[in-house]
Image 1 (tube, rainbow over the protein chains, first blue to last red):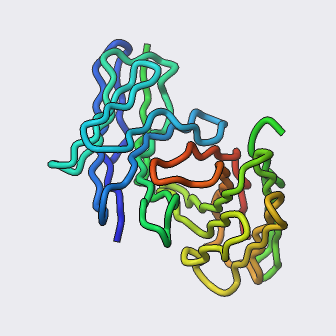
Image 2: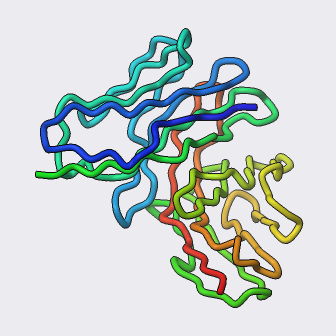
Length: 115
Length: 116
C-alpha cells in the first residue's frame, strides 16, 4: 500500500545552518506530495506541495522537488531560523478513485534551531 | 468560521467510558477527514467523508470507533468503551472536493484525549 518514510528526528541546528529532511514514498500510480508543519501549540499547516514529477514546491524559503526516479520529496532550506523550530511531516495524497484525497503521513521530524 | 474548529481541545476520561469529539469544518468544504496522532507517531487515517458519498471508514481501528457527519457540516467521532491505547490527539481536517491534483487540506488544532 501507499506509505511515506521520513528521516527520524530530532534534528538540532544552529541558526543559518542548511536543513535537509529526507522523505521517500511508496505509491501505486502518481500521488501528490506535501510537507506539513506543526508549530508548538498550533495545528498542522500546509507548507508546500507538488503534484507531478519534477515539480518543485516552495514556501517561506523551504523547497522540495518531486523526484519520481528516486521516489523522494526531500525538504530543504538554505538558512534556518529559530522560528522554523517545529515538527515537519511529509505526506502523499492518493489519486486513485476509491481513496482519492486520502493523505498518508510520515512519522514527523522534530526540528529545533538554536540562536 | 475562519478555520477548522474542534472540541473539546482536551479530554480526560476513565477507561470504559464513551467519548464524543466534534469537528466544525471550514464553511463550503465538502471533504472532511479524521486522523489520530499517538505520542511520537505519525498521523493515522481514520475516516473520510466526501459530500453525499459513502464515507471511507477503512482506517477505523475497531468497531468501538464510529463517526457521523450531517450533510456538509459538523462531524462527530465517537469512541465507545475507551481503552488506554486510545489516548492520542484526534485531528480533523477539511477541504473542497478532492481532485486529481489535490486540494489543500486544512487541519484543526486537535482534541487531546487521555484515557486513565
